[in-house]
Length: 156
Image 1 (cartoon, rainbow, N blue to C red):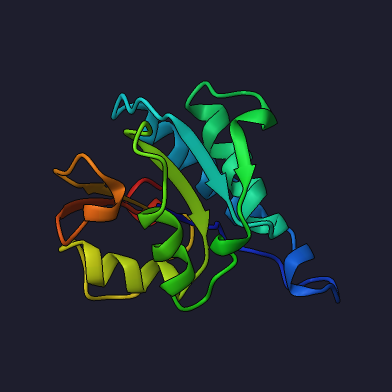
Image 2: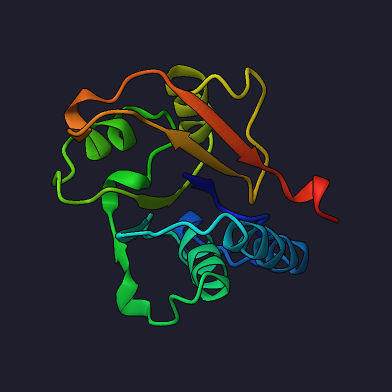
């Protein structure tokens, strides 16, 4: 799970259309490079329809060698600022997916990290990736697990 990178408030745009700030672009690339070192075998990437989330996904999956936008599926349930829609989405995933990557928003990301992972009780910063290590065979059976977080601040 990735919280979108730092967005720009420079333009008067609807929330879904806000672009990434320059720092957001740099942070997304840094975290993508670090994720690549983890040798993840991602079956599917899902993104919120918001421009800042989708652009974060494009930058990070490019660093993972997944260059096509066809590898990123837009999912309205990830345009969630609480966490319940995002959790319901993950619980209903097809069980032939072993590893997925999602791009979304706060406070959904913080809620999921706190309720499903033991990695943090603090706010999930922008461009932070949280890797959950679920030991289940069905997505509907996920429960609290160990997780790892990759924060751009530690990579700069």
